[in-house]
Length: 274
Image 1 (cartoon, rainbow, N blue to C red):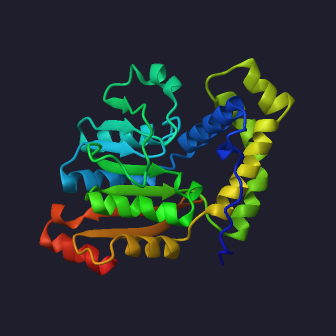
Image 2 (tube, rainbow, N blue to C red):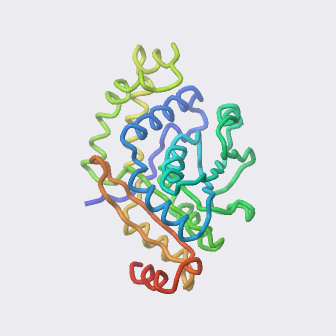
């Protein structure tokens, strides 16, 4: 049974947290999710939405370093058999990423702030939010879904944490896992070895942040209530919410779609699913 949600402080979210450590935590998350391919249950849904709507552009929200959505985009492009453009956005953009992304075809990094609750009208495309919804308080998380519905843009959100005692308790293993996977994280450096092994600040921080992520996570029923509020009185937009296991990890997802972009049969089907 889930316990009440607690918006516990994650170190990665704190402005005083050193940028080196923040980047190393992000590197581990990218490495870990790459190993378990956590986007796999989501890729088919993104592919299906792009086919339904005819779009070939993903607008990623709260992108951070972009490491979570890049493999998802590549998997979707492979399934479609054609290129998919990717636009990375964040409320606090990091221009230092631009050189890293310059050689990646079809990728644009928006260097001005983008609020996921009020995405500019010119940023059209299928919106994604990868492992970021739990960072937002309920009103803000609901605002992200409502803005997609208002703009008639499809959206896919997914998380890999759950608000349960067993899963929160499992975060005690995360520091050891982070230390074990440290050699796989890129780029390799003496600083990484120092803060991962000699002085394991980053693994311990990951354990704390993983625990807080569980406390902050939203349950499917809560997400359904947010989705219903975001489409109150709207008959041309619908959300689906679900949770499934992938390699033992709970993957919770929200899919929103403009029903005017699909056939009447599909519109009725999505309404009945609620």
